[in-house]
Length: 249
Image (cartoon, rainbow, N blue to C red; front, side, top):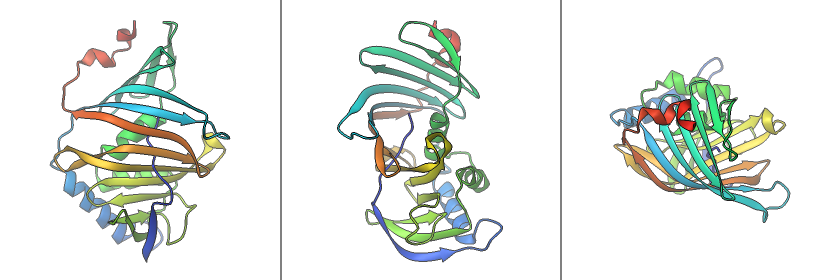
């Protein structure tokens, strides 16, 4: 499942617009400053234990809840173990391939999860360049020549991709120390509706890097997924066989 975050958390205070044809200097400077802030941090792997709650689209009181144990090994290795309704399921992703062990014990090759890779892209920017991040955000439809400054929970953030009072354009909300606070995008998998992912309750992870312990996803302004992180650890050197599809047997 993907990480996501909240709506109606902020208010715009100043407008900045760049020139067409490339990232504005304000945007590039903000992204460069954040990457420089975390540049000395080393994260070779990350282990996350979290609880995921999925809400029914039409009935907010109807939901499914399950626990996940996630092992991430950048750049593109992920193992997800989850138990829902007493049934265990394990998924291993290596690059562009993925395998899942279903509750009945069968193993199937399946498609990779964009959510898992997006989690690493948004929350683990280490070893990346400003061009890398801007290119990834443009793939979400974010215009990097438009921005404005606002405040989120008394902290300064730059909103990349939207002007003041624009709540529908794809945008990334970036804090100079905490990283990405919010991602607004259009998603074809949900009929092009507005997907709003927010990241909050940040805690120190390693070096200058912070990690959000609360993540929410809203679709068409309705809460779809709530993720509460119970624990996070880094640089534990997980064994390589965890990412071997043969381990599912």
